[in-house]
Image 1 (cartoon, rainbow, N blue to C red):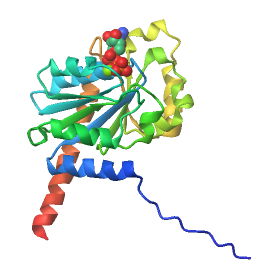
Image 2 (cartoon, rainbow, N blue to C red; image 1 turned 135 degrees about the vertical axis):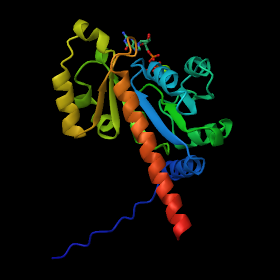
Image 3 (spheres, rainbow, N blue to C red; image 1 turned 30 degrees about the horizontal axis):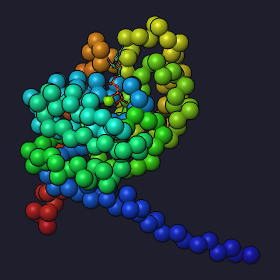
Image 4 (cartoon, protein in one colour; image 1 turned 90 degrees about the vertical axis):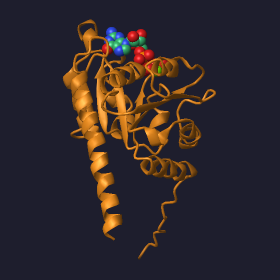
Length: 232
Ligand SMILES: Nc1nc2c(ncn2[C@@H]2O[C@H](COP(=O)(O)OP(=O)(O)OP(=O)(O)O)[C@@H](O)[C@H]2O)c(=O)[nH]1
Ligand SMILES: [Mg+2]
């Protein structure tokens, strides 16, 4: 007997629709955006500070900083002289598309090349809320332990790049990098991986090279789309 299977059309959630509109707005201004996620204290702000310091002469960079209650992180980034907007989520454990939408008008988007978004420190909720960025990056860190890919698979499965920070303290912790990587590989094969130390700067160049390449790819894709419009 044939069973009728209802075809459920994928209806974008309200968040996904706003994420698409954020993305269109960013692309309209030619801005490549990356969302940095991690557990609390893994080193998101430290990575963003390193990135801004290293790339500020190549790209015009802005930042959006998600924080439950303070402006500490946005203040650290703004101190580098780049536009930085703080979003206080008022207790919420993640950023969502409406929050990013409300932050975008506070930034000079037409004068930016790259927007870095620091999500709220959390390995669960941020994975479920699209923002409308071009790349999602996870910052893991050695003190968290090597089992995190196994325990938080949704986060590890959904990202485009993985930074393993605090490699300078590897000897102090029982962190098996091979075990960690096997867990990652099972979830997200071939994921770009950067073991670094924001403290010493070791490995940071690899991360920067990847980010440069992603910005370049964005520009080439963007350029092609414009070329098609002109040709059409
Ligand atoms: N040893 C060591 N400490 C680091 C490194 N990177 C960051 N830290 C320290 O880790 C702590 C947290 O760093 P942040 O960059 O504030 O981390 P975060 O992920 O932005 O934290 P939240 O925004 O509060 O979730 C700070 O005390 C940093 O100095 C590193 O590579 N090695
Ligand atoms: Mg931070």
